[in-house]
Image (tube, rainbow over all chains, first blue to last red; front, side, top):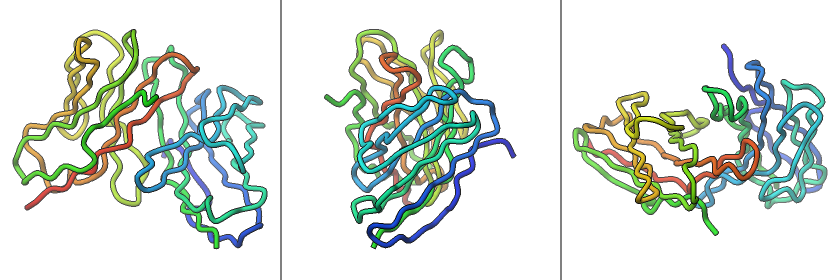
Length: 115
Length: 114
């Protein structure tokens, strides 16, 4: 099925550990995004990419890094996890604004707990 | 400054009743407007969107939304709510200021009483 796939779906980390979340899309979308969702805070943009090899900071980029070496993949890294990074992480992708089907397609999320 | 406002954090309706979820945005021109729905433990799913043209747009699951330029609003409606509509609903707006960036409201949690 076409869409956005996030791996892993669940993860528990110890404080100070590192990990990488993988997002893959098979719709040939130009834009990709990483959000975190916390109760009462809505969706907050961490980083995004408007094309292969490009990345940009969102609202809450501190403590995270990203890479988009291939158009279909967008990786989110946590170098040294902190309890404040406990959250549900969503990846999304979108075609460009000029296309009729412009709009985000979301993955099903990664639930991360940092202890 | 918050660009997208969903005034209602939580709404409760009875099954079969009508529903209206409010969304207001702060932007001078006509933005691109979206409504998404999130069921528990799931990602967000697109319900409908407005780019231009007819200001009343139809979406999936029997939802519709009306763009009102004079009120800077894009309210979501459904004539008769089903128990399966219980979920969180997010309004999102592309203000055109940042390439491909959607700004999301804080969400409205919908509870449906049987």
